[in-house]
Image 1 (cartoon, rainbow, N blue to C red):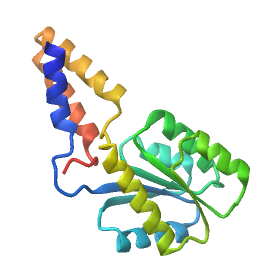
Image 2 (image 1 turned 135 degrees about the vertical axis):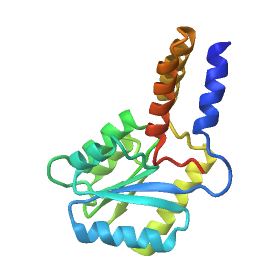
Image 3 (image 1 turned 120 degrees about the vertical axis):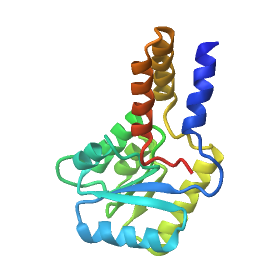
Image 4 (image 1 turned 120 degrees about the horizontal axis):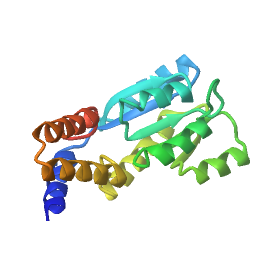
Length: 193
């Protein structure tokens, strides 16, 4: 019963609180002009977007994902250090709640096939238009709303419940406090409106 109570409490902490949701985005492209242009289009044409952060390549994006929790990832394919397909593969494994979109200048069937394997939601060819981005964002937001997008993965949520349960059973107040603080710290930047 304790795990059930803790699960309900943890769920209340991480669930959206109603009202209009704001979605965070990570844009990954090695061309600064593309990053800036996409960010501008997104900000101008989508009121549902909260924070937008950018990275130059997949390796930088993964580093950023250690502290930033976007709902949507837009990435180029060909970049130095780590390409967009490898980034999408890793994100699909480690952050399954993030919806990924490939934005590329390469109309290559092999890229498209691999992106499907990694759960990419859309594949947009450059040059992108305002209409392309608006349509993609609309679909991403609709998908997030339909599935009641979880703020944290189920495995991470269960890990929190187990740690809280252990701390409560051992009557370790410091551990309970540390675990709750850790949860809030991790949730920082997530959609919690």
